[in-house]
Image (cartoon, rainbow, N blue to C red; front, side, top):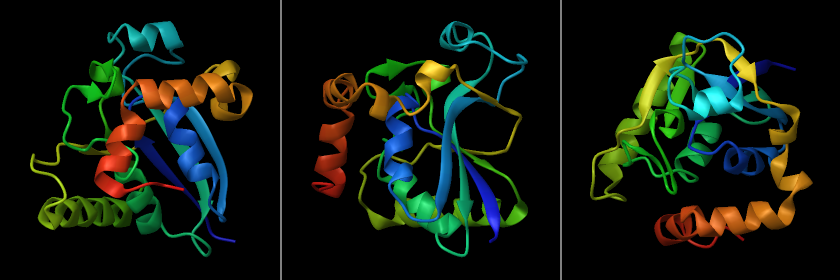
Length: 176
């Protein structure tokens, strides 16, 4: 087994777990905070946009089963990569999209993937998702972990109400 890590910020972390959790080779998806200057931040601190952190997910995966590039493709299909002010209903620095790379190889793959998406013509606006070196990752409070399983009704209403589900369907088709 070749265990690797991928870290992605894509707005509300509640919506970023399920898309990755469904794939063979993904061992865990942890909601948390990264990219900022506050050690062990709380949800309230991160949402205040004073910590420099973004809501993110850290994915532990076996790259013999699922590649980093496959994870990048999933990531692009669950965010709005053209939104520099947040994601969908959630606005501010803590909700901006980013790829946090754990190696030079991940950096290269992320840059190539972003360039390919821009060249695809799928979006009329520029792709503005940041690509940054991985920072310390702080797991979010337990009630945020696996939110889609703990609160399926609220999760579904949120993904639709925030505009995320409609955006994904418009740009990538029906996920079912």
